[in-house]
Image (cartoon, rainbow, N blue to C red):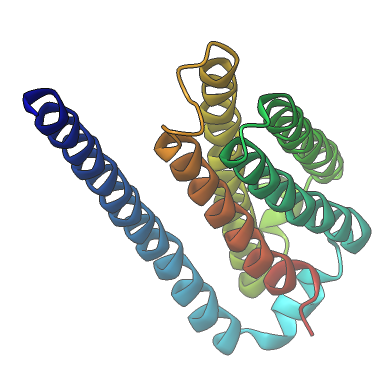
Length: 209
């Protein structure tokens, strides 16, 4: 009887910890939404002030690369969700495989972003360059926001790679199992937010009309 009460108390304690961890993650995600939401608001104000110049600047971005990266991140959201679902069903191998694929897609996104930024910098399109200073105010603001917002998003991708890699090691070492999923679920929530932010960034910068 005492053993059963101890077990029940332990399960309740774990449950409370899981709830607290999930609440903490949602609070963190809310602060991230506020951060990017503020940037989206600044973008909206300047776009309203310089609609023609924003359109002109947007035409210099590579829509194909942006579209490929969008597909990559949407697919990575699917694979991280599949990783969670697999571990819920005690399929450790499939969970690990899906998480490895997710991390691979994250690296692929950053490789594409590296080549895109490098191409822009090679053409003198970066904050403070002589070519940039010759442009109109609206174009300067557009590219300033482009580098800040996509750069911050890229930083979140890198952080996501680190987090998912650590979670991967935890699964391999059985520190995360079907009965202890909260860390994997929270990392999945973070990754979904990173993907969602890009879904907003893509049309604002690459599909501007």
